[in-house]
Length: 453
Length: 130
Image (cartoon, rainbow over all chains, first blue to last red):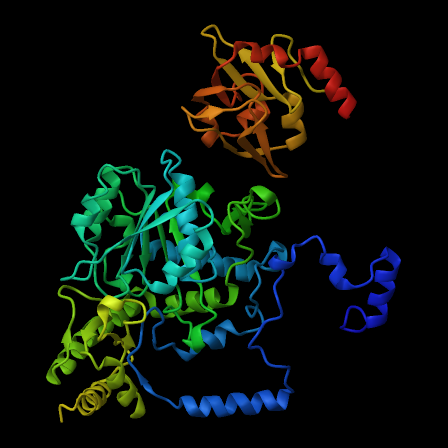
């Protein structure tokens, strides 16, 4: 049997049979202006050998720069055992294991994953993962709207210092569903949510509050005060967190007096390589009372008729099979393989290992600031930070970064594209992978690029 | 053969309605409906205080087989919901006409009840569907 489902002749015969002149005529019902034109900017197909050559050339041009860019995707050491185990044949699948009797190993792994992520975030239940951190946040916003049925406004407060890509994704997914996203400006001095602006919403009907910890600038928010503000008004809190930071910071389940309602984030720092932006995975946890409103699937532990333990996908009624058109989300899969790696990563590191990673991130970010200060580059915001910080490189920021890149040092992410108000500011990151020699190189490159030497 | 009760009114979409002494109307799904759905695992009731419109979906019952809309048999304001179903949706299977009631409506138009089927008409409807 050929892999090509139908030949031109098959197509012609089928069209003849139903009395239609061409395939295009099948789409006559769709107004012309709604039809997508052929994609522009996509070249013709290439042979395998040509592709291999192209990729080698491009990889060569990338070189092996020393990178201090974080901005939502973080370089961490991944023990070799993680992917050695994750890519074993027994685990090596991106698919959701529907057939429980043939998938006990994968199902147990997801169950362990849910347990670890629940503990890390201090929440009661976790789903089996979503596409990435940004889409997990969009799902969390939809979920919060379902939870807070008392609120009629569908107005969600989102920090301006939330990752710009997350804000764009959330806007794209919920923007046409009657949900209004109101951005909270960051405080000029400390870069976090300005509590006075929050007070301005005292009389308004707010459906949910999003809190990013740390926020896009690496700034630690006063999560307890923000959560209490929401609790006092019956507004659900959605926490967007970095999983590595949770080894040091207070778990969202303990924020304020009751804790956050939904916790989401990007799972990439837990064992997924940077890999040009993906595949990553989104995690989501919540309180037991909201479990019916959580999208995605959950793996549960149960017993068979003889009392033997087993693992099954459960609470998937909100998915396509049972709820169909009434499904709470259109999530069709979890990120099976990346979650497998993350689970192995967390298991290998353990509590103590993850804490050591987080502590190293913390101290290295301090070192980063101290070394940049030596060449006259100062932080933009006061207060506490986790593994990245905004620095004021001055009016020639992009020029400085370009000159540093010329020496193979990526000094950070220029914020002016996303934040015109922060022209000249650069977001720089240092995780546990950075050494004193790396900081020496950074400081030397910065000194030359700024003309300090 | 599933049970129908003569003291109740019925909708074509398999809800039953019972008039209470205070004028409110209690709504549930019929024995026939719960039999077709099978074991219920979740009931999503309307929000107390919300307005429902006759013939419009206002609640969802979810079984191991399907999730189905429950339609408001009459228009009015939801004055109570059966909180017990949150933890024990199986009450609907065990006792569809008593403990398994879903919600209570204060009708805006008392005549709305007259538009519903009586037990005989409903039994006929069920028979014709089988």
